[in-house]
Length: 344
Image (cartoon, rainbow, N blue to C red; front, side):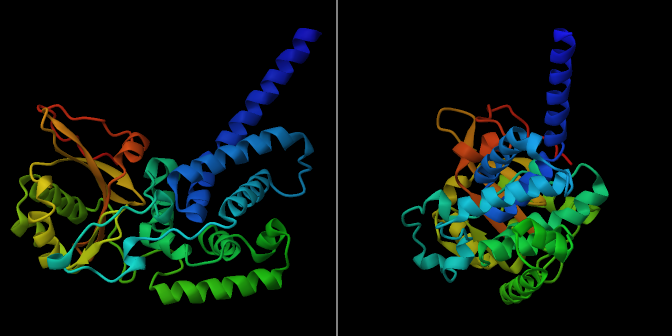
């Protein structure tokens, strides 16, 4: 009898663990939108699952199991956001810097920036669901969310991204439908002022990733960057394309200034190798600069924004010590390493 009880308890625990794990990816996407940090989001999800595991015997089933998890995750995120300053992109903090006067200056702390997130941690496996979800994790949309107060942020994500009913959101937040609708209206107005649509698509519409034209553009970008051919590279850039380099707040706009930076202060990137990956619903590259001791060492995670057949943004995140392990990128490339094929 004792062995039967023990076996039953183990089975129940395993079943609960499986139910919790089944929601990890969507909860990670939600917490990432709320927090703007891949690492804080994963910590928040882990805390959510631990709390749910400990409290599952008190779950009364008055809402769905999924709604219950979102309530816990929302409370965890709101607690983390209490008293914290909003995360941003360099473009949110200052005007573009002309290359002639560009100085990197001191780096800002990681807590200042919207951080990139691997698609594998947030987007569903199903291609149709990925297409529907992709825009809501783009860097521009996540940055726009951080113009909102935390509860407004939660309301907009739940209502506009996850398509919850107002009554469901009101129950989750312990408030009224009227309050939820009012918060949503204010959030929509704020997002409209940022130039980012509620669904997450950048103004003008983003190309569908991995269309044949998009693949060809990325292949040309990779080839031009590795050859450090600025004429070929700038031919791929939109006239208003931006280059940013968190943790520095400096950024620049336009092919001429970008090329001048890359052949001037950024000339150390000549001879780099790029390893394709995916971040924030967009193509990305792990950039490795030549290592004086041989091979190539991590330098930046580039998240490439594309619209209307042109590169509109090169977001080079320089915190490779944390980001490359997160993305499963090698810590060093030997001299003979060939670039990996782009994964879906």
